[in-house]
Image 1 (cartoon, helix red, strand yellow):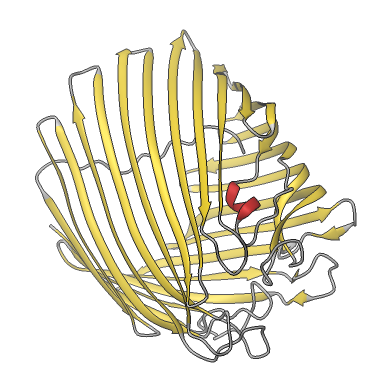
Image 2 (tube, one colour):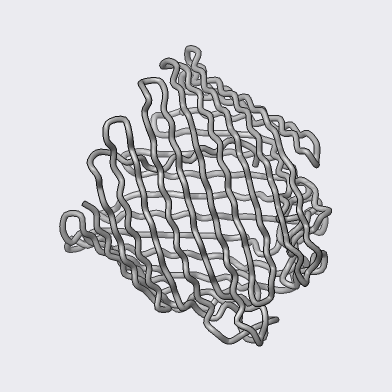
Length: 463
């Protein structure tokens, strides 16, 4: 839960390449996208914009608190861009920007048409220096600003996150060493509302991490340690150790153990769903895996056990101002299970599937954690018929509980989806899919509706 995740979006390459797509679907849904990407000498770039809308469906069911029997649709727009410049063989700079706006309906009152408006603005800049074949350094700074506002019942949350990361990777013989310095600054502001007085808060978290990995014949080892220092919650050390062994040409076994740490966000503590007394969660995790892969077929079996103290979860109302629910700490939680997954091809049909047996339990009460299913499964098949790619998939989940006492049952469900695609000509393709083909009625949260049978068709073009 505390570590470095690097996300690299696709760079533009070659001459300018425009793209566009148009999607129409159920609930009067219409979405469009247009973009261009490419490169010129040391410069590469990409820019895209998208806009969509939908009438949606009624967000809650009859009998729910605040149910308003209207359609709760949405409108969304976004723009994103990236530019990079290769200064020389050793140094490179990149910058990216994402801006999005979303307005959607919800049921907060039986007599008003409630809407929320969410804006997101994210910017990142990075420099990378490759000193030689064995040493690389990367510095990245970023800021994310988001606002969430509701009307006509006014509520607003403004969040600002600043991130700074310095990462160095050094190869020494067959060993790879990494060092990381991080700083994260978190700010939150809530104007005064009917829920309470105005609130403003901020905190920061500094971290240092060291890592090592190497291969020894058919064996691979890696170890990582990290120290986080939170301005509110103090310091916490975590680490991990992992081993892999390719004991046969097509077989590999892995084992890993790690500790984890996560502090609650300011939103989880001070929004309308927040509880100011939340404390950080920490965990001890172990995992054992077996994987087989040969000639396009693969299968894996993974078993895990995570023991978490003060798990941060979304719970029942009562401890915060919201009547929907509040964040909470679960004293001692254990999440253990087994995942079986596989993929192969038989007679021109590609088959894939996974099964999860999961026991997410509150050890203090011996109850299953709310809204978490004990069984999950997915299966898919895909083939080519007369130039069309045709596929079907099944998604299934066992029952779950709406409340921590495990007295309110959310029934299990199975969904059947169907999709097709075809390249009509060079650069032009047609995609279509139908989700929930059986029009299954199911709930992920009590009295909240999910989509029935729905479909969409997309036309995609690229030069």
